[in-house]
Image (spheres, rainbow, N blue to C red):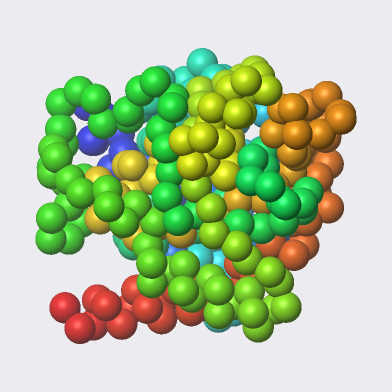
Length: 294
């Protein structure tokens, strides 16, 4: 069985699992939760929970703070599927495995995703616990998940599934505008920044952080970018939200540790959950409106 068929089988299994309840529908909006940011999943109503271990071919997270399950239901009355935890390249997974969940979400019918992550703050003035919407990214992972044979059947919509596709607007301007509106309604400050992705798992050196700042990066982390590239290949709109869980190397007195990153995420996760809960129905209305106008 090839990769495409594996994705389709996993998506069909998930579809049957989350639509078994009468009146339930396959979601059009997905949310991926990063380290220590799992509270948004707990806000899902009428939740159906599916452990990753039960989904065919699905990779399993090995990192603390990533629960490893799909949570489907409603947020603010809108159908949603939430990935409570993700997998990373540094865990030993291949690029195809790292992005398999995003492929499955696309095959399930998701047309907009909110990708959250715990990130190191590079920009002057960033505070631990601050939320930042991604305006762009820099891929320093050393690889691209689309290397290899192109699979156009993964494209959903005009211009999707192409071998060469535009990444000028990797992170949707329209979704960022909705995020600012939702944040204002919740009384949450929401800046915009540029996320630089590395493979990890070691944290960065102070010299690297100085170089990244010179390149225009304001945040640094070890995820999100592969998912964004694959989502855009499929025609899925992306909103990226970073939580500044630590100041990058050389910018603070403390040594960096995953435990501190996780703890900082837990301190801010309720604020992020409020934002996501308000934001999901706004995104769902936009996605459904775009489908209706097509």
